[in-house]
Structure formats: C-alpha cells, structure tokens
Image (cartoon, rainbow, N blue to C red; front, side, top):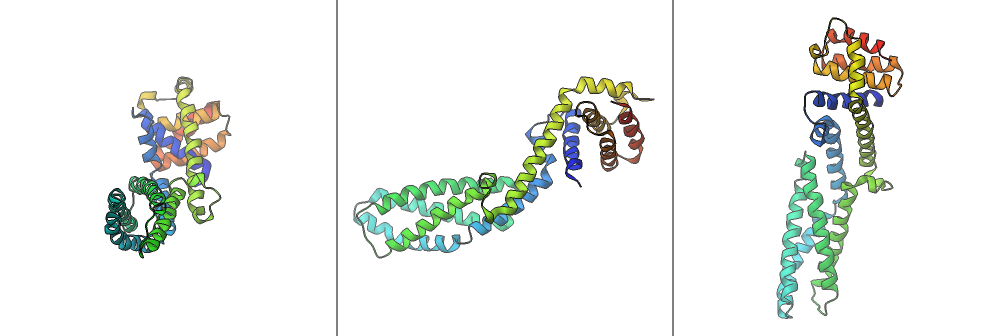
Length: 274
C-alpha cells in the first residue's frame, strides 16, 4: 500500500471512531496504529538484545563480587554504603531478570517498564560508582566489582538509544528502529492532519455531501461510508487534492471496510463535490 493510501486509511479509521461518537484521542490512535506499533515493538526488542548483549557477563560479575565486598565495608564502618550495595545488587538482579524475559515481550507497555527500570538503575549505579571509587578502601575483589559497575552503567545508558530512537538519529546500531519510528511519526502526523481538518470543516462538508446524495439521507448511510465521504470531500474541497486520486483510494477503502455495494455511492457523491 502506498503511503498516501495508508495515510487515508488511518484517517478513515479515526474518523469512523469519531462518527461512532467515540473520541478521536490517544486510545483511538493506539488501535489505529496497532500494526505499526507491533512492528516497532519487535524492532525495539531486537535492538535491546543487541545493546544489552554484554549484560549477562557484567551482571554475573557484579552479583558475584558485591556480596564479598559488603562484609568488608561493614568492617570499615561503611554500613550505609554496605546497605546501598545490597540494594543495588537487588536492582541489578531484577533488571537482569527483565532482560531474560525480552524474548517473550510483545507489548510496548512491557518495554516501557524496562526503559524506566534501566533509567532508575543507571542513576543508582552512577551515584554508587562515585561513592565507592572515592572511598579510602581496598579489597582484592573491588577492582572486578568496579569494572562490572562501569559496564552496567554504560549498558543501562544505552537503553536510552532504544527508548528514544529519534533523539539518536546518527546511531547506526539502531538504524532499522530509527527508520520505522520516523515512518510511524510521519504517518501519524499526516493522517492526524487529515482527521483534524475534516472535523474542523465538518458542517461545510456535510452540506456538500447531503446536497449530492440521491435516494439517500445522510442518516441512512453507514458510518464507514459517511467517514469516507467526509474525508474525500475534505481532500477535494479544502485540500484541493486531485479528485481522481481521492476517489480511487476511497473506492479501494470502501471495498476493504464495507462492500462493493458502497462503491457507486462513494463514486457518485465525491465526483460531484468541488
């Protein structure tokens, strides 16, 4: 499907929700863009796996060395630091469990949980890393733990590449995700403009549609057909889009979402509006 046709399809689905007295708000758009969102979710999961491929080794090293450091910290009366290290170890363990579940994730909401936890963990690691490296304290296991902390800090920061791909458009490691995110943002922006424009001019459009109906009243037309007529009339009358292009796409959408019986009506009415 070409992009203009796809834009019209997304706008039609939202206008149908509007004509059915459902609000054209975020929940409507979520349903309208479900296929594109599913694609982004899959690409995001793939990108996260790539960005976090070093996580198992770093997490294992940290979770192995941290418990050995805790008693030494207590010996040196750094009880607060010891307690914070135990809390940090639990957070790392929890994040690692989320990472292990990546292959089963299918919803954007589940990814959002990982993004939020990665951000919180990054902040905690950064704070503790500064604290532990500034302490007058030595232990054989300390260098290994600090190295693991450094890796974990870098890894959790790289999650931001996946959560906000359009803010990192020069990052080649997420190029497929960036491309798909751009496409969805453009599709949503352009279809939203069609929807808002149609709704803003609804009175004028409905007058034009009603004046060109034969053997029908507007109340007798199905909501999908009415949405198609409103959208097509807006493009022809207000946007000055080529009539033939608008009618052809409207007919294709009528066949997809209604039946062949709607085609003559759509064709006749849109051919007369100007």
